[in-house]
Length: 100
Image 1 (spheres, one colour):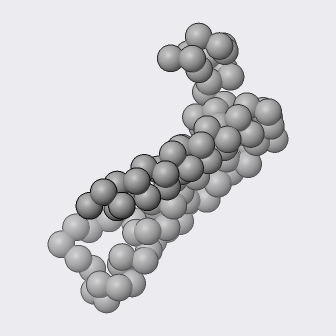
Image 2 (cartoon, rainbow, N blue to C red):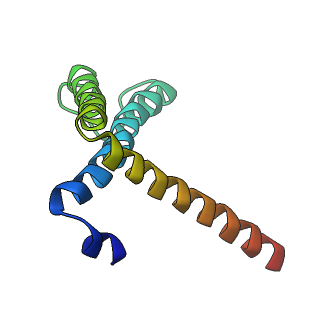
Image 3 (cartoon, rainbow, N blue to C red):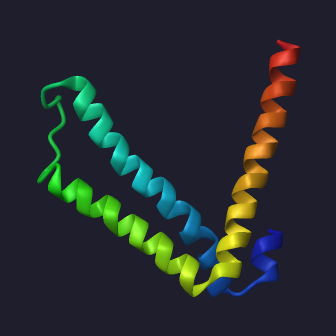
């Protein structure tokens, strides 16, 4: 709520795009890993794989780099929000495992 009230749509988009597309690209890379582990094509066929998957991953990384170059401060804020979430998760996980 604080983020939505504190910035413009373009700023908020800069926060989100720089972090989201990292994970979109990692998801595409995971497809390569899962396909290699399975050995043979699995039950689900991916049209054009591996070319389309590689192009998708490349496009994701280009978008991340372009966003960081175009809006470095907004990207840094997005990465800081992501890091804060990781810290909060680590604290929650430590608290949760001690109680169990």
